[in-house]
Length: 157
Image 1 (spheres, helix red, strand yellow):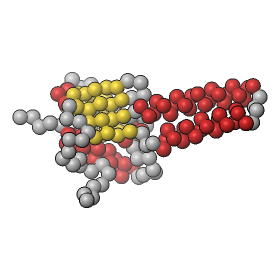
Image 2 (cartoon, helix red, strand yellow):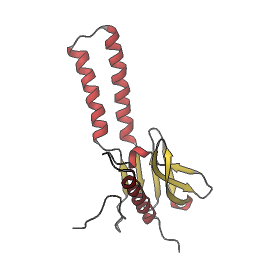
Image 3 (cartoon, one colour):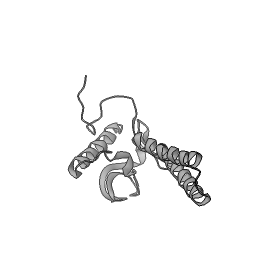
Image 4 (tube, helix red, strand yellow):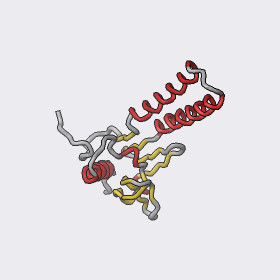
C-alpha cells in the first residue's frame, strides 16, 4: 500500500487525473429541493409562498445539476476544464505552464497558461478543500495539484 498525501505528486500511471465538486455539496442542494417540495405538498402554503418556494426550488435544482457538471481532467493528451456550461480543452502543445494564483473569484486556484499568454483558471470550488483549512495548507494542496498536472505533461524529445 502506498501512503500518499492529498495533493502530493502523481504516481506513474496511465489513469487520468480528475477533480470534481465534492458529492455532498450537490446532495445538500437536492435536500433543499426536497424540503421545498415537501413544503408545497404537505403544508398547503398560500399562492405567494408557493410561487416563491417553487422558484427557489427550481433555482437550487438547476444549481445542483450544474455543479455536477464542473470537472477538471488531466491525461496524456492534455487538460480539460469543464465549467458550468462549456468545456475548455488544452492540449499539451498549447500549454506553457501551470501555476497557482490568488484572487480568482475571491480564492486561490490553479491557472493553466497558454504559450500565447492567455490563460484558463480552474474554478476554485473544484480544488479548494471542502473542510475549513488554513490558508498555508490549502495553498500547499494547490501547489501539489499543480505538480500533479505538470507530472502528466509528456516529456519533449
